[in-house]
Image (cartoon, rainbow, N blue to C red; front, side, top):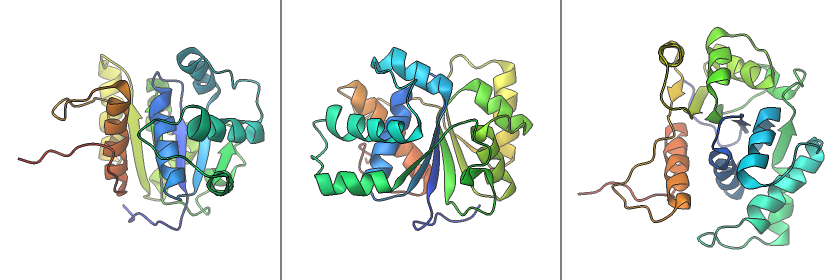
Amino acid sequence: MLDFNVNEPIVLAITGASGTQYGLSLLEFLLEANHRVDLIFSKNALLVAKLELDIDWTKLNAQELKFALVEYIFVTNRNEKRSSITEEQLASIKNSLNIWQEENIAASVASGSYRVSGMIVSPCSMGTLAHIAMGTSHNLISRAADVMLKERKKLILVVRETPFSTIHLRNMLSLSEAGVIILPAIPAFYYRPHSLQDQIDFITGKTLDSFGIDSALFKRWNT
């Protein structure tokens, strides 16, 4: 695995698994920490977001989705634990975010010549997991993940399903043997979370840890 390079963008994919907030929480942290992000928001993820967040982004183009996401994350749904964002910061955040449609196989992230520090799929559906394990490159998400594998870049899959079938487990083992980090969205309770946001922050923090990015999103175990 190549080391994390802060000067190169991070590819973040949000699939149609339940748990849209995991991906949005990662996006919020990365953009606020001045990381450049290439985001792939699948069509199924947009449908799940409509169900889970009561927000309809299904008819927006890539540019419209960028502005809607930034507005939702940093203004409308800003958690009280987070500090407010200035207009100047919002402008910088928008410039740091690229959004690609899943059918756009000509996107930069589909090529190994496009330099990125790695990729996170959060949440990762079992369908997406299977496509990555089989190397089908059936859309931009599985193609970008395939690029991470062939270029020996870091790839983290925040899988969201329960229980796992034997097929799921075999696919995860196959990918783990190829160097992929399989990170199930399983919250801990030792730090006594008080809210759903605390549990989301824990998974976000653990994902960032695995990528090599420090955060203070959750209380670490210390005896």
